[in-house]
Amino acid sequence: MTHPNEELIRELFTTYGRRDLDAASRMFHEDAVFSYPGPGPLHGDHRGREAIIGFWTEQERLAGTFQPDLVDLVAGEHNVFLLVRVPPADVRVGWTRVVVYEITGGKIAAARVFEDDPSAAAAYFAEDTA
Image 1 (tube, helix red, strand yellow):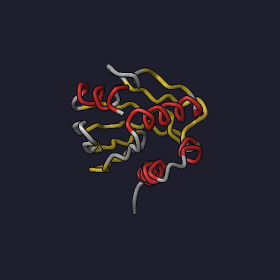
Image 2 (cartoon, rainbow, N blue to C red):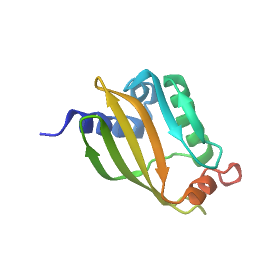
Image 3 (cartoon, one colour):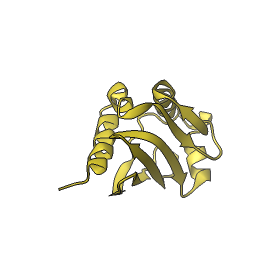
């Protein structure tokens, strides 16, 4: 039996993969914060469901279809750690990222991205590579 928080994040990953951004955003609390630190056009705290959808939409605009490969997932009572590999695209190199999700009441309260290669991520989403 899988942990309910693992099920939530796996469903988020699947729903996002289908590009059903409205359904994916409903897995977040209304006032959730999606944090993307570091350089590049996507950085910042994206607060609320609409802002999270805006973040995802901008990510797609800059990179084309953006579908990282799930490598591993570890779920606990309050957090889920997701390890994904962003595959190379066109002339852009891939990299690995960790996303830490904070779960409260069966929904995502916060998410924070950690890039193993922030420069590769910034270049991947740069305006002139899309």
